[in-house]
Amino acid sequence: ARTFHHSRYRISEVPHQAEPVPHPQTRNRPAPVLGPLHAVIDQILADDEHAPPKQRHTAMRVFRRLGTEHGYTGCHGQVQRYLREHRGRHRETFIPLAHPPGQRLEADFGHIHVDFPAGRCLIPFLVTVWSYSNYPFVLALPSERTEAILAGMVAAFEFLGTVPREVWWDNPKTVAKLILRGRQRELHPRYAALASHYAFDPRFCLPAHGQEKPDAESTVKAVRKRFATPVPSVADLDTLNDRFRRLRLAEQDRIVESLAGPFRIADRFAAERAVAGGLPQRPFDPCIERPAVAVDKYQTVAFEGDRYSVPRDYAYSVVTVKGHVDRVVIVAGGQVVASHRRHYERCAPVLDPLHYVIAPGRRPAALDHAPVFRDWDLPERILALGATFEERSGARAGTRQFIRVLELLNAHPQVRVERAIADCAAAAALGVE
Image 1 (cartoon, rainbow, N blue to C red):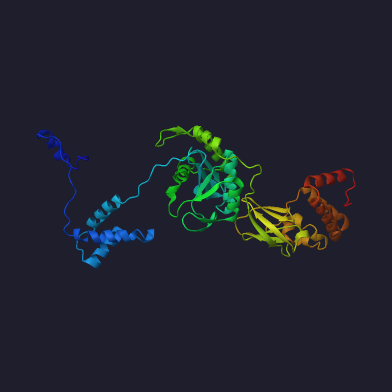
Image 2: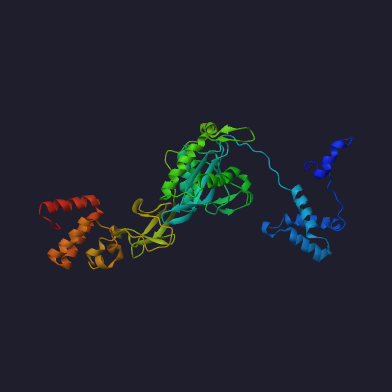
């Protein structure tokens, strides 16, 4: 009955007839009310092809326009059925594609919820997939900014040990700053530097054509269903990436069903690695740079809404700030002068107490009133030394002596200073000199 579009009762009568083969029921029924308006509907749908996707006609909108502008008195169902048949005849079809080994890598971002000790968070993850072998790489990142993309791409190349000829993205502004004519793009300078360093061709899908990189789109869905269901519970982002690493290594033995027949991912990826490009001798520095940043009177520089401290020698000077995905590095004269953990939320200035230990020599009271010193997590042995100096020489003189000891931390490791204090105490010569 389903095949020939007849009822079951009609089918049960067929074997008793002379020709026990029912003819398919035709659906070309006359439409005396809507029929004269078919040309009007076709024109509306033709105009929709040039309209924005979110401003195209629905069946209800077409029905109302026919009633208002053309006096249509029929029902909404007739309009809905005609539109369904019309759109079915005009649906987009696709050509099966097969990319050569080592040619194409597709990249995209997805999001999953993860349970951390502090609660459930939505975490972005980067996906790269080789189009020939379907070998995926998945890496959870703290953001989707340019520096995160650079770090993820560098990690993918180093993990796989090879570089494709082409890398395909959608059109995120962190990679393509401006969409020009056709497939031409104005690249982000740092992404252009990444492409130059690894010698791959940066390619992009047409706007609103995500189907041009189907492997990355399907892998994002697979990560949500296969790797992140149920919701993973981990201690931190590094633990989550360790889990992703084990899962992507296990993917090598997976069998993929394709139009050309089933294949094993590891076998095809071996063919890709044989013809793809190799890694350069030096790794790429995955960061964004802010040159010519002025240091203010508080020995801090601004970067992405936060302020990070530098040593006193570089106050009022101009430095370069490098923003990595996990840290902020400050460079002056070609040398790294400060390094801090990266903060993504606006917070109090990120200060290193060692950058300020020279200043209390002239302003001893700052040791008690400056938060950078009050919140300094010093070992108990060093703190006890300060109390000993104050008890022996008085508050003001003892504080100055303690500051001289703290200044040693600029030139020596903390462990070495602690050992020197212990040796002096053991020799009964616990003095600042």
